[in-house]
Amino acid sequence: MLGIIRQKMTAGLSPAMRIRPVASALRSYSSAAKEINVREALNSALDEEMSADPKVFLMGEEVGEYQGAYKISKGLLDKYGPERVLDTPITEAGFTGIGVGAAYYGLKPVVEFMTFNFAMQAIDHIINSAAKSNYMSAGQINVPIVFRGPNGAAAGVGAQHSHCYAAWYASCPGLKVLSPYSSEDARGLLKAAIRDPDPVVFLENELLYGESFPVSAEVLDSSFCLPIGKAKVMIEREGKDVTITAFSKMVGFSLKAAEILAKEGISAEVINLRSIRPLDRATINASVRKTNRLVTVEEGFPQHGVGAEICASVIEESFGYLDAAVERIAGADVPMPYAANLERMAVPQVEDIVRAAKRACYRSVPMAAVA
Image (cartoon, rainbow, N blue to C red; front, side, top):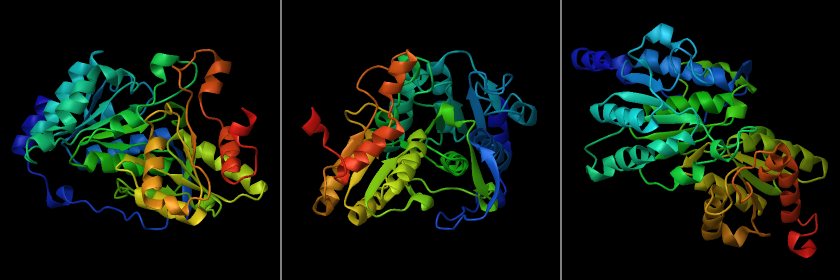
């Protein structure tokens, strides 16, 4: 890290390195060039940003010699060396504090947590040191740091490794919170997070790392970047009967639910939130004003969740357009069970989304009637 600091003090960046073009989010990416999985998308985004900006470096447990617990940092140690790909001890509070201090100085750390459950050890630095410094310094201090790693339920890892922290971090002013679903999301949002002058919490999903998605040539371009705070209406699932909002793995579940609903004559519009904070309230409300119904989907706990915030926004801004009560689908209000059969019951499933959409469209018996 001292080498990075020396390099920053003695070497100025070229204008091309200081100003990089950002691909417009409004561009249409229709021509699929190839398929890449989410792991490859994250790896290529890190590689390109580290290549473009010598102030960017990666740190965390096993990110170097082991190439990442989930192989996200594969090949980066060989390419950039141990001063820019730093293996840390098992001390989240320690290396997160070091990362925030480096960001104070003007470097751009990417701090990897093996799971966001372990970030609980470092939450003081994330909230008090990173999120609040810009405001407390009257804008004099920027903290350009990314906290990234897998978030939420995986499979068979129990209560202490399955927590979704989207609502936790999204409730804190000063943070930006992103949660990608596809390879396009992962690549474009991680680049945006690294380039952003403020702290970004980047919530990935372990079960999506190996999932492959088609990407266009534009997405693979090194200048590609997605805007923070903008949701995506899934083009293949624009609809007119009900709006379904989701993020991360639940986007895939919602798309499957929309396919089932289409066979039964219900046209569902699926919104991939991408950004949890800032939340794209305009896109959500515009969709609800078209469909007149809303189903929110998330893996986290139901109380004070992301879905609850979306419900509040729609009630405040589009109440007169609703033709049915808002339906919220969330994880069970219990710590994650270890047993596989109970674990499945604790996490939203495709059939849960289908039933909720049918209730919103008055195609099934309301839950209250059968209770």
